[in-house]
Length: 423
Image (cartoon, rainbow, N blue to C red; front, side, top):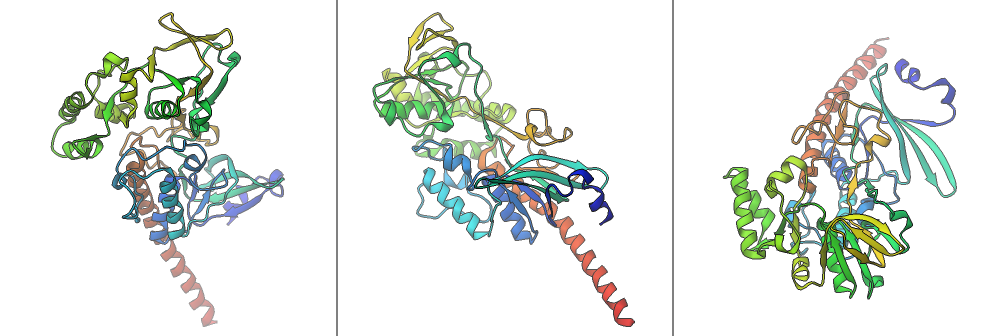
């Protein structure tokens, strides 16, 4: 108790409310935070979940486009302890996945503290405890809270903040510029020339949606990309890859996938989508770069309804875009499908476990646990299956310590009671 009082600064003792948490504090109420909370609930460990938005899974609820579906079969995307409903399709859509997450939170009695934004989190060497400072917004009022705990679980994930590239002249572009996280539907772009910057899964799906809504999309393919069919002979390509990797070396699995892809999709390079020298699964494992699973965009690219263009040199003269090959495009709007990044460096005051870019320094499968009671979930670059793996390990690890400490406290309390009764 002496240490607990010592770690509160005298000058701001009365300025903020201090809350002691007997279990871990989980930062983030997306799939990563929910999965960890559910596994802790099964272990009987108390916890507090902090979420800056006003709902769970805010990325899915507020920053995804309407047509979004899970790219992988549902069995690879379910969270621990609760499978998807049997009547859900193999690839649940956005609304179905959100419904699943809502029911997941209800099932495991997870009630996050919403509208609470973490300002800083640091480990106090003197007390051996974590100090997490937050600002909570309720209507027009704001209050500061400091949580004190033994364990900190970082569950803000890989998609906390949008990435906006620094392109010359973009700020002076006269048309509309939005990030893919603000894109909902191509309906309002009907008849317009839209430049989609980025050729990953988001860029492909946005371009396809624009095309289906009678817009005229051009997609920037500056870097190499693996485009694979979502299914081969009625079987999920990802499921096939997972099955093959149980028996074959990674390089051979990649060879088989690329042969099957060539048979199904043909040579994507002749459409401007050049493949990396590294195979798709090796690239995913080594650099976390996910291959594109085609759901119809390639057909539109073949027909010319989606145009592939090289990298952007600069934006100039109102609506004109200069490309790296010297060509110029006249476009009405720009959608930046340029991905996301971790926001951990903006609030976590720690440098041993996380890199300056906000990812664990240790690679999968060892990036879930650091020293001094810090954990990370959702940073494996292996999607929701990686989330589940991390969450179960973290809960088991914390659960062991928590149960031992609880038993010790119970023995101490019982001993004190016996001593008192003797008097």
